[in-house]
Image 1 (cartoon, helix red, strand yellow):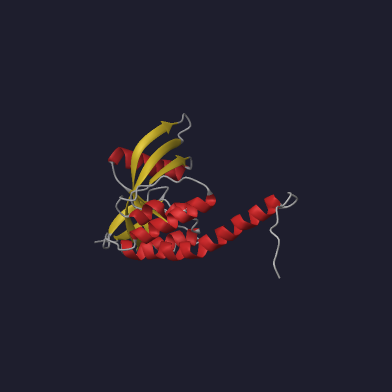
Image 2 (cartoon, helix red, strand yellow; image 1 turned 90 degrees about the vertical axis):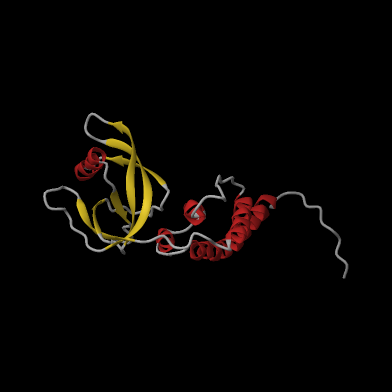
Length: 209
């Protein structure tokens, strides 16, 4: 069933369950967020990529008003609720400063996946190569959403992930991405090591011909 949402297009992708901190300064979005706070209603963030809205976005809830400034600006914490497809877009909504539109909620697909262990192995390999620690909960529901911003996807790839229905499809997508990225990162690390060794005394093994 379609419903109407105030819309806040942004050049980013937000996933269900994700926390997103926003600094609100434009008058139209100050109006939007104030109404969401006063009426306890959600709003939508349709992804705005390459100067267009390709159609998918995330319904959001204002979870916390962190700070309100004297000039009306705000810092708010928001949380992703669910995914929608944009049906139409009005800018502005009649009588408002902000945009809005009808959206079609996207039903969550199958949350089960047989690819989790493979994905976890790839993640461990990537972070080991990068020598960084990334905190994530492998038991979290919709794990693909939890890790999507942490594997070097482009915004176009993040958007493509948003459009996939099931957890298995999303995990397979991430595995394919990591299969391409890991060899590149590994070669970069080998190159860095060779550069570090340049000029050092080398203990060379004799060669037998």
